[in-house]
Amino acid sequence: MFNFGRAILNYCSSLRQHALPPLCLLCSAHARCGNLCAGCRSDLPHLPVERCPKCAAPSRAAEVCGACLAHPPAFDRVLAPCAYAFPLDRLIQSFKYGGKLAAAPALADLMWPVVSAEAAPDLIVPMPLGAQRLRERGFNQSLELARLLAARMDVPLARAACARVRDAAPQSALPWKERDANVRGAFVCTADVRGYAIAVVDDVLTTGATLNELSRVLYRAGAVRVTGWVAARTLAPEH
Image (cartoon, rainbow, N blue to C red; front, side):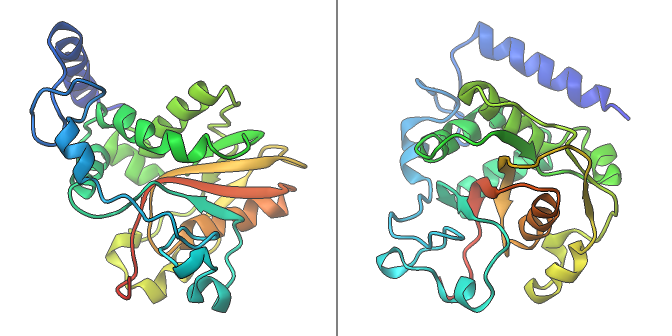
């Protein structure tokens, strides 16, 4: 069911942004470029250059990290500009749970230098959202990011290629070790993706369990490469 109240608020916000100078989404200072001021941009928790080539976690000499060596992920790799930490976590939470859709362009801008440096995929797929959470939020945050990146890269967006067929407990509410089982069998792919290199867009990567499960589904459907594009990735305690 469409959330009309949230749509009206975002429409009013859009009108304000076009009529007045943009304000920073984090501190409300004037933002000369995009929706973040220079100070907040500099405070973002950017990931170091040396990171795991599979999961994007900080890694000495950019080697494959111990977690990926012990349990190789199904996906090819993850591209992420930042760690999921202050103040970026506030922005993502306001977007995801507060319906602040104005955050989508700021997050897409943050992701763009990282994803555009790689070879373009054949198809962009947003991480599917379960029916219950879609009703609660009124939108799929991953689709909003995927829409912006697909248009900017001029790559087809397959918004309905995959679906979540089983609602489960929120991953954020579970211990890390239980998250793989929580999403097992949660997705289906109904599109013909044989021979395609696919980028799956999501807001945050935590353990990688959700991306891992969707990657398995896409590979079974014939995809040749699956890369995760996320705005931020959570760092394990040892990082």
